[in-house]
Length: 295
Image 1 (cartoon, rainbow, N blue to C red):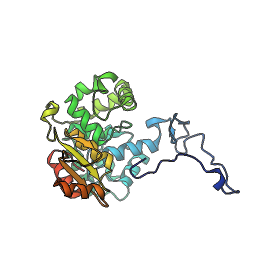
Image 2 (image 1 turned 90 degrees about the vertical axis):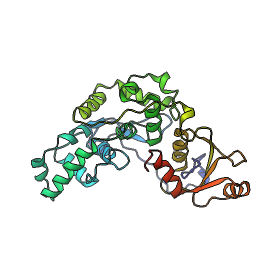
Image 3 (image 1 turned 180 degrees about the vertical axis):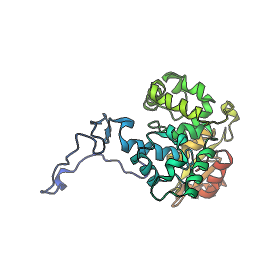
Image 4 (image 1 turned 45 degrees about the vertical axis):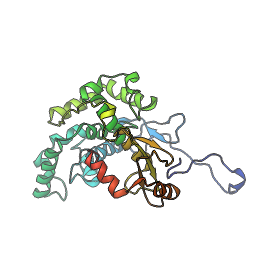
């Protein structure tokens, strides 16, 4: 609530149509038949089948291969569906054991397409720690949190050994995110998958642990206003914080810079009056890219 999706605060019973019918929620997953549960405080029903569920297998692989994660060119949604449906792929670790002959047996898969996919898979093995953390699809761990975790701990080995109290020291990590991370690190199947990926050659350079004062935007105060097309305002704020900036809600003489999206109003006007630097979305994305954040 407060960005794009409005917050529902109450139900106006007097406006409910007389012929309205109650919504009937499923008792089981329509794909794998596993039980579904709704966690306290959430509206979403979740399949409890985990990666036994083909739908969850597909979603995890699609996320892993996406441009902002491992960026595996040519591994589109339809091909992922096909690979899972044909029994050639069950999880992301299986991507790096795909064989050319098996790929050529797929419908509409020619030699050039198979070779291009295998080349893209090989190229994707060289990645970065933030991308890898994000690619794992740990619940509530988005790009900004993945970047914060990587910069705070520096290596996968250090990150995977921490406990909740250490995770709570990281920007963007609260109790819910910390709990999901600890569950992942404590899961033999999840950590086994990471081990298989690394044995297949997936690698990244460790990050140097820089003090907060050494971050690129340390000591600066930024304001984000208007609608950004490439990312939400909360994501933009998170990226700025990960680079060391403080993000404020109003423009003052102490403001270092304003990121102005579409429809920016009074804050943009105030920045002009005070002579504060203003970046449009394109310039902001370029600044992020210069600091290793690709959107």
